[in-house]
Length: 115
Image (cartoon, rainbow, N blue to C red; front, side, top):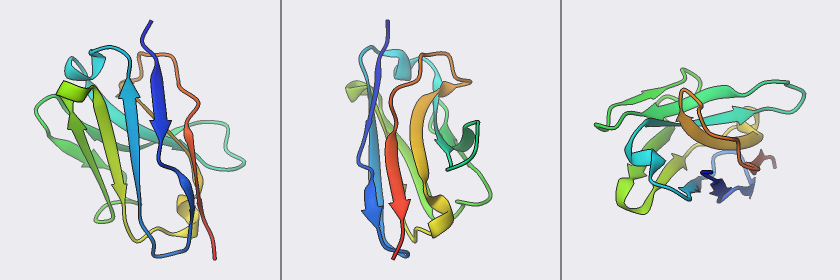
């Protein structure tokens, strides 16, 4: 069974940057589109933040366009999310998965944007 491990979260001030990483235990990222999702405090579901196709085409939620960049390294079975100009409303637990989500969810990584 494929396992997903997210890392790179933390506490950052508004306007700061973080780079999230997600490693898969298998080569599933080289087969499917991959995405980052997030679950904000008080929300019951996960929302799509960004996704990247096998060919490298990207798509972003309107709220993060121009600030976040998704990338992938198929050889390393890893996907990244570079987050710049962070805002308090970006505070959430961030998860990666295929797009659509086909794998069991990992534990996520907490991102807190606060002064």
